[in-house]
Image (cartoon, rainbow, N blue to C red; front, side, top):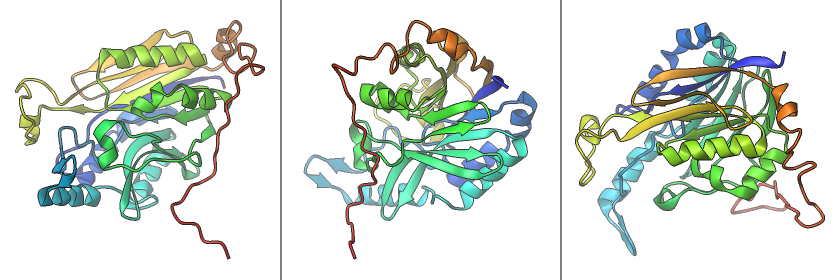
Length: 307
């Protein structure tokens, strides 16, 4: 059936760590089931946390011992993929009947990645995408992904894919995802700005696809016990802004601000053909005689052994 219900679950990582946050996610099971959602998108770095305002004791040219301790705590709060947390999320997907897309901090050896995980109600954990380009000082703590984790997968609602936060502003990455036939674009984020809403609407309109963006929501740093210099006491650390957009750039639901909640909308993938009638960005509106994009999907480990 081309019609389905999609949802963005707007919640935030809890100060108590990944166990508390996982319990919070699982507490939404009844709401997810009652909503009838067949796809639920959750925010960036929800399991593992987004350490907004943390400097990790780093100045240009040197790192302080307390920064190493902060990173060790952050590393301990990240998850293994697969692991106990992914098993619990697979169970949630199976019980609710919904595909899940969720942002996590993934351990890989002694490095961390900002990752989006895909869960299927029947098959469990089926794919992942590692953020290709961490933004700004995120590069202190997260490694870069490579082209081997750029999936667009078939699901019960159509072809879905995930692009994390400011990756959404990488034109070539967007082009690659469009070329893979994405129909429902999932955008886990912590970007609360009005400009993010503009970006989501642009992608929906450019790619002639549905967009489901889920943003974290966090209380003020003072309420969370976090110290950030000159941060207003009454200002949330992350104010949300989850949104669902149609393939002509029209807002179907949201943006949801200032609190936790489940945002839902009914979509009809038959609308995509109508939307692409006059603009198929990688089809009749492309100019392959002038422009060509090559995407390297090989895994790029730092060490390769050849027997």
